[in-house]
Image (cartoon, rainbow, N blue to C red; front, side, top):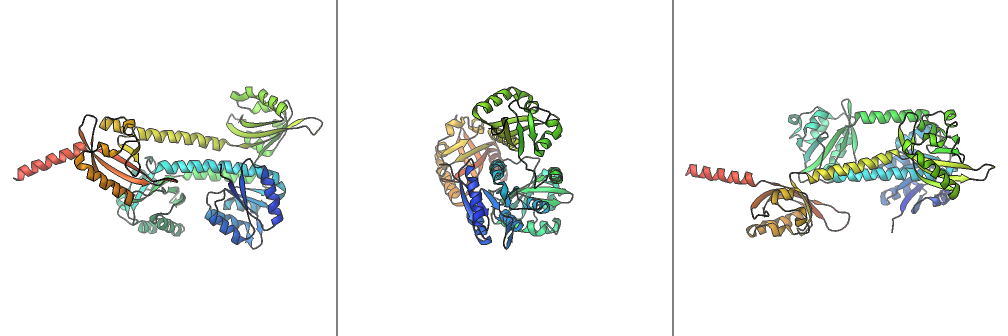
Length: 507
């Protein structure tokens, strides 16, 4: 059974909460409605529940809306927040957005609340999927263009990569061997220092660290700490997002200047006749398509469709006439040829003298692009794994291989399918089976292991592999163990021959 979304609503008036709850019954998904009347109830639900979306009344006695938004951001940093209030000024609305609210709705616009909730949840799910994918792969494959710093469990810097040096301007000689706290006090600004020290404490204690920004000289750096610690300690990935943040800030300021927060909506609204001629468009449509209202009212819906979907226009009109409603995805083109993806829900209104079509749409271009980039990212990571020169493998707590990459064929001559669902023990020579048993004991008890193992290839030749493996936590079921191994047979044999010659020389 599909789990219900949880909607948490902070509202001191029971009657208003019931009206909102009743309005939400038309949401296109099952949900559980939780009503908090006081600050204490609200904070308790934030801590103990896992809301999918948070609704906040801006005017709760003894608890202002900005504080409620900040508390929600503290306990649920990624959960979307919508302000629901009777009235709100432009300055207060801007403050809510800056504090972390995704949108706001006036209480007398309950019909709009459905569209807002549906829209922010779609964006939230897309961002959550991207975040989960990044956490899944980033710990194994960190691009060389991203800076990486690794510290041990006591906070001493073990190593940094060249990209970290390029981004920060700090050399390996300056950082390696120094303590993280000492470096923070030396290089971090006084404004950022308390926050950075708290983050270092949490990271060394093994806590999950949400991505955060750090102002460094004239740059803005995004710091990401992978959720899974390695055998040495913790690693942090550093990206220079200065230009990205500046562009985002410029866009936000531009929108804030021109958007009327009270009288207009972000929803794309229009009315057209049964031939597709526009009769009404709101300011959001004009902004998106970069036409004036006067110009759009002289156009037909077909005029703003992307060239490759214009042939679907008449099918859309037929659907409206027959079904009285049409929903789906629409590709539109603005005045300068840029393509956007809109999700629309249009219905036929026959209450007047002349039937008209009322349309409401949401711009899902960002979600669409995010999904496309997510799939491309996953494909790139899969290619990296399959083409690695090292053996990358996954086994269960008994040593049964779940998966292994193509490197096993190059090194041992076996196809990956030959190894999968087989116990690694069967490929180890008998004199060394006790070493394998010791490995299983260590990896189960300590969650990590490294060392050497001797395996026979398809021709019966012995190979010495140097391995390193860690436990991978699973949401459900027993743990799995992931490792990387490389063939060091030649290096070991060369070392043995060198030791023999030295012994002969000494004798």
